[in-house]
Length: 191
Ligand SMILES: Cc1cc2nc3c(=O)[nH]c(=O)nc-3n(C[C@H](O)[C@H](O)[C@H](O)COP(=O)(O)O)c2cc1C
Picture 1: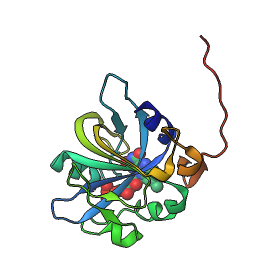
Picture 2: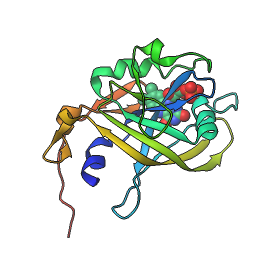
Picture 3: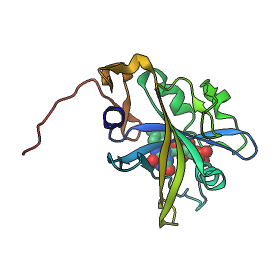
C-alpha cells in the first residue's frame, strides 16, 4: 500500500475529484491533494481543501460530497492535463464536464460516482469527515476521505510499485504553472 501511495502523490498534485450529482449530471473539481495521511495500521486517507468562492458560496463538489458521502480521486498525468484544465472552469452545476472536456466516465466498483478512464490511478473514496476552517471567501474546509478501492493501471507498475516515469504525474506550482515529475533526486534520512 505504501508503495502505491508513495509514488502517486506529488506535492501540489492536481487531482480530478469526481462526484456524482443528485441530478445525475457529472462535475469535476480539480483540487490539490494536501497530504497523504496513510499509515500501515490505518486505512489510506486522502485530504483536500475545497475553498469558499468569492461570493461566499460553496463549490459544487463540496455540495455533492455532502449529499452523497462519496467521491473518486483521479491522478492527473501530463497526457491529459489540458483536459483536466478544461474542467477547472466555474460552470453551472448542470454542465456535464466529461462531455465538455472529452474525458471518459467509467463505472466505479464501490461508490456511485464514476471514475475517469484516462487516469492511470483512481481512488474510490468514502467521506470520513469534513473539518471546517473558515466560511469566509477564500477560506474553506478540509475533506478527508478513506480510499475504499484503488485502481492502478498495470502498465504503470514496476517491481510492485508505481513507476513515476510511466505515470508522468504533474504537480501544480501556483497560477497556471505546473511541474513534471521526471527530474527527481533522493536524500537518505538521518538514522
Ligand atoms: C490544478 C488545479 C488545482 C486546483 N486546486 C483547487 C483546490 O485545492 N481547492 C479549490 O477549492 N479549488 C481548486 N481549483 C479550482 C477548481 O478546480 C475550480 O474552482 C472548480 O472547477 C470548481 O468546480 P465545482 O464548483 O464544480 O466544484 C484548482 C484548479 C486547478 C486547475
